[in-house]
Image (tube, rainbow, N blue to C red; front, top):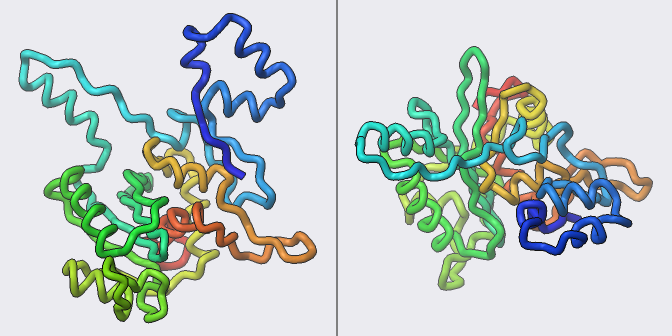
Length: 272
């Protein structure tokens, strides 16, 4: 169960003096953290798929977008302030990771495999039922606006090659051969779909980055993906309550979560 988040503490000046104390008097600590601080905390029916993710905005894992700079008479100062708003690394390509289905998802990444490996999740598109021939142009138009001039590399779930994939209907309801073929034929987008890691191996790469100090950060606007990492994505349990080694197909968190592991095509060393 995930909880809608409101940072009530920021609105305390507009509330009656005893409003918040009266409200939280009989509530638990986790409820108070959600309600007052806007932290992404979950009460889950099953064990969380990822451990150690910091749910506090501006903490270890969640990047908080700076406020827009004030206008300046000096163009150089203005340009420098504007550049700080661009979180993407200038010398690294943008990796677009696609997950197909009736509720498709896409996330934009950058990964720097230097002396200190860094992984940034820059943006997400998810949460709405859309046909791919509507979803893909929406995503790509925003990508071109957000990161003009960047090299774009596309990755996709291996299942996108399947003819029976759930997303193989276009906007007119006509069945196409596969999601990968639609991307190639209609939008001239080549999607890498090589299947060389299992779900568990891909998830281990994600967990390795989360556990590495300074190795993983995600933009605060990626709310669904953040919620998945913070406990929304859970392990499936068998009849005895033992994890099966597969994550729950919840129709919500699973889609952006799957896009996180898709770019990694080798064993859990972090290579993409």
